[in-house]
Image 1 (spheres, helix red, strand yellow):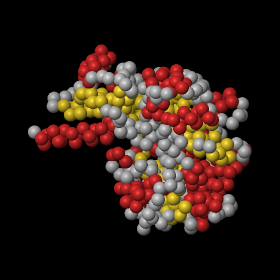
Image 2 (image 1 turned 60 degrees about the vertical axis):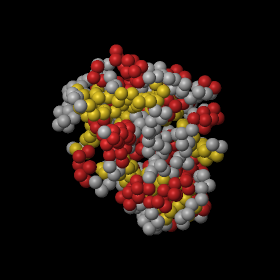
Image 3 (image 1 turned 180 degrees about the vertical axis):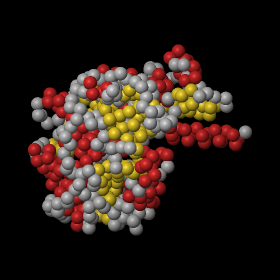
Image 4 (image 1 turned 45 degrees about the vertical axis):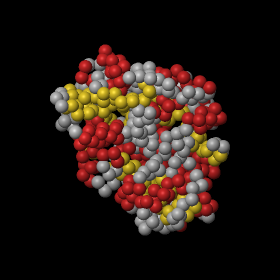
Length: 544
């Protein structure tokens, strides 16, 4: 029996032909077809596809002049800006491997990734050079390049990006690339549980994932009759989600990218008013922040036709509210750095199930297996570990054979996420395997408690963790941010939960915060809250 129940609900092709070309040439095909269309917009500055490709080729020539050869690594530590696009695709052209760095990394984290990847070039925004100095990378980096974005003075010897770009003609040498074998990106992940691991993504991984995503959007795009359309480039390109959905897909469907260097509600509202984007890839915290903004009713958001949400689950009630305000549709999806990153999505044309991550992408196979033995496939509706197979799956972890062997088994990637599949082949993420709360032998997934908390009219954000309990192992503690102007007590929140869930899942403690810790992408840092809680308990014990 074929257990791939999702195939009966496919609104598009379930299998595709993926071009075996480099990511650069995948972009170039589109640029050659639409040379005069707008490719990039930063506030008021526009760049056409022709101009963008010329600057990419200039930077490729610069990399060659630096002595970089196929397989060498470069590191990008930039927010979304023109320089990021030029350097990223220039590296793809010359067969270089991009190590993507969050500009908010600490000196210790930066030092580890640069040295682990053995990057020969570091291209960074001026605002992060203090971190670079603290990491003492001067002796490890052959070429340090600064992109002036804030005008901040730097105290180390670095070459200005603009000067390098203009010094080279746009005619770099051609480099032969084997898309299925040659690496394109080292996507570092897992830093919250120890040293980060570099997921090795090939050109074929990235092209395949871009083509899958474009397939989901292709029929929908026909409604615009070939007109120039725009996509919001809010998601950071250094994150795998932003890299694929904004950069690789946005530019190749094609859509002009509105570059947003960091989340700023006023800037986002301005860009929507000015350029009328139709696509808005984002994360739940960004959508909720805009929805709860006190001035949201003063802006016309009708141009937004589809929002692609990922990186974290979005509460069903928040989806409904955002769609009501904007008139758009939110397509929830799912993925991992190790999968380039997208594996699932709700279809735009077809059945959409809010609260689910949708159905697997074309040519992507999935199973729910027993989380203890990792092999026995579980029946419909039963919760277990999600494992995935497909052309977007990484080659492995950079210089980490043991981690690779424990994550990739017989062609299947073990996600560590607990999920279930319904009778239509739609998948639902229950929670992270490691985030599970065990109360007297009963399993509690934080997300199911958080979904109830979001139903409370005063709750803007909520995160739950397990805290130690003398008799039952762990109980639930909720951290909550209230909506502007709202007031509530812990007792009120707890009482709200009692009739809505089984007794042992009701939070025992509630703590109100003005904000919750998040990654740069907007994903809640549950582990940071758990560490804070552990420290607080240790201090209490010492005081006793």
